[in-house]
Image (cartoon, rainbow, N blue to C red; front, top):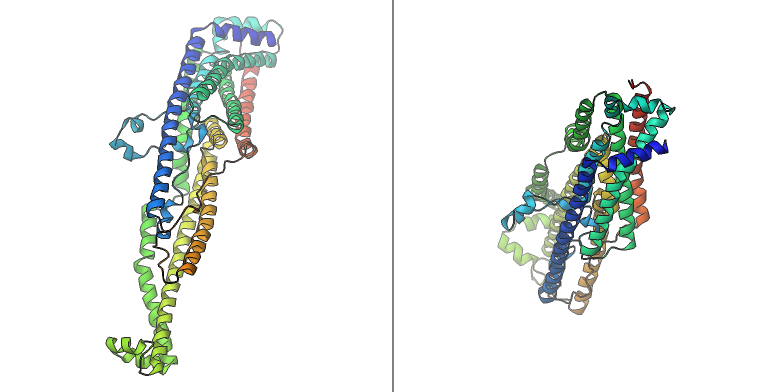
Length: 480
């Protein structure tokens, strides 16, 4: 079996399709990483400028009422975006005003190259391993050498794995070299460990397609039929399933329009809140009117008389001043209660939308696993901190930071009030040098590897499935 595998590798290394495929893959990877490293440098520089401008603005004009928009001024780009763009690949359409080309022709990362190019190469190298030899008449000769059918198919599978591993490893070494030379920020041991894990997962993904090509070759008798079959399988697994899964999930678990939700919340916190506050105030006034005759007398006064009666130093009836204070307190409480009730309703709407959105995302993920391609994408983005797991970590840290920032704001306001009880502490320029600054804390490599384990398992299951199909197909294959 090993001799057969070495023969398959040796024969493949001398073919034009191997040489052309290897050269194309290595060139694509090198150009992609170089371009993404340049793009990463530009984004890092832009982030640094934003931080500097924000610090200068806070130093010159800062007061507590202006710090809200400066809490989180953006997160520094992740270092591994030179390999795995993930969620960072969405280019803002505003950039069309300056340069439309990044929007029209987005950069392609290493993950996309592995998903599209290397999966196709694996099929090109393996689609005729059995049907091609049958047509050439050598398959019958191989079967006469005393090798069992499982051993023969195992040798071809090892040969295919060795063949595709050569350009794959060469491309990843090229990617690592270009990243080391061109990336503005040197990678730490964590990034290199994540890169190695992504490379291993990518190799497993490519071997899945090599096994798929071999399986298809055992189910057909002519190379042309094998070629059409693997092309159809590639289109379905790489192009159709990953793009169709979100639409199917949206049909099964639909979401309300985000614009409609925002309008509903805006109305809830505006006109509906005002109406509720007015109703609560009127109910409180009626209750006070029934409980306290002075309140009833105060409400019968003209507006000008109410102002005079409510004055603390008024020489009039003291009960009217107390009634005015009761009504003022009731009005304040009605406003506070209205804000609370409508705020809780708005929060409930947002929470319901988030729950339904999460359910839709999880369903789309599950449906997309009908192909190994999304599994590799999830694996790579989780390890590189550019995917859904990174976004969840970022949102959790930002929420934690917001709570701490609110505590700092109120503590600073209390300190300013103690220094000057008459000052408008929220709109008075003050020293904000001790204002907390948000810094994202990267997830340790162990956590990323644990998160990638299910995706690795999914890729392994696909590989075993395709190998089982190849073995079963060849067990009853007519070698004549």
